[in-house]
Length: 79
Image (cartoon, rainbow, N blue to C red; front, top):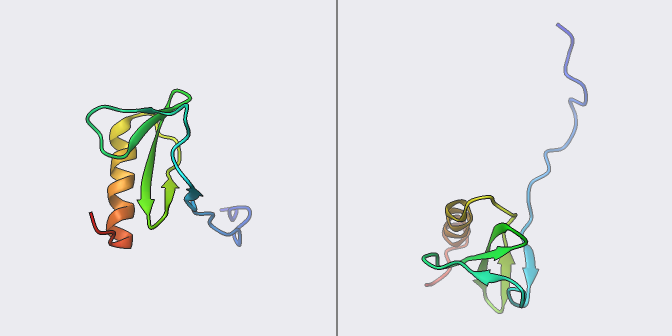
């Protein structure tokens, strides 16, 4: 078998963006704590200290909320 190309390529992981607040044009999604609708996609904003962390864009709001819950658990943020 031929070896896969680019065997030594680094795995790129997502680093959450840090923002002062959710943008003005984002719409809060009812029924979800951290989810906002932005350009037809769902994005989670989690308050960490004085700044918000922004998730990647998801096609369903449940995925964005799960991301927010995971970030809170990883960083053990007080609710």
